[in-house]
Length: 255
Ligand SMILES: Nc1ncnc2c1ncn2[C@@H]1O[C@H](COP(=O)(O)OP(=O)(O)OP(=O)(O)O)[C@@H](O)[C@H]1O
Ligand SMILES: [Mg+2]
Image 1 (cartoon, rainbow, N blue to C red):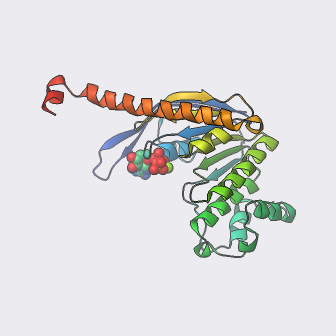
Image 2 (image 1 turned 180 degrees about the vertical axis):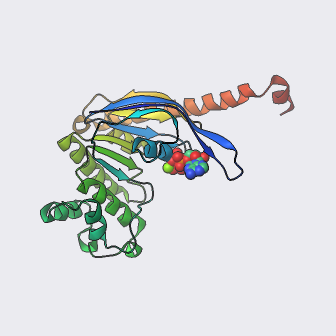
């Protein structure tokens, strides 16, 4: 099972009808059981590319090939729960075959047991995100797409859920793409970290993390985080240089 991505370009039109490029030259593959983490500046096009990978947006130039019949579990950046359905109904709606034992286990893992009969309007954002995670896990996905799933959770809970995501991914060899602004999440969960440029986005660096998730030492994690931070700084400088290069010497002098 393999995801192949080769998006030459993706554009949006604004309200005035002007086109602006969001993705330009995004190319990578991802295999079974691999976790790819996408890290990039706000607004660069991460959510846009996840929608394309999930097959929800076909309006782009290029090619994305998902394994045929792949079961996709997706957590959107906003929890997107049906407000008139309870927590349990929201999950059962997408996973009608889930049995009671598995559902209870999932709610226990995500610390949602007491909220089972609550409605989305009664939940905090962090709780709603956990329901969205339960919904994605309940279908027993082969391909998990997670858009900042651990945002707005406290550190201790985020760490527990990170463990659960890692367990799920490793136990079933789930192909996973995760967007995160948190380098710590990226390094603890990812097998490969993709650093993205500002819009129009493309991969500026790809960092493989060969040590298996469970065997990473705190010192090893700290070293990779430092490497990523350094590369991100270099990328920011690089894109600043690109901007400068587009300005003619005369304009630059006048600035
Ligand atoms: N439906 C749309 N129509 C027009 N422009 C859009 C649309 N959706 C997103 N955009 C624009 O495309 C760019 C990328 O948006 P996207 O939501 O993919 O960014 P992102 O990397 O996920 O940002 P963040 O980290 O803040 O979530 C932004 O400039 C955004 O304004
Ligand atoms: Mg986004």
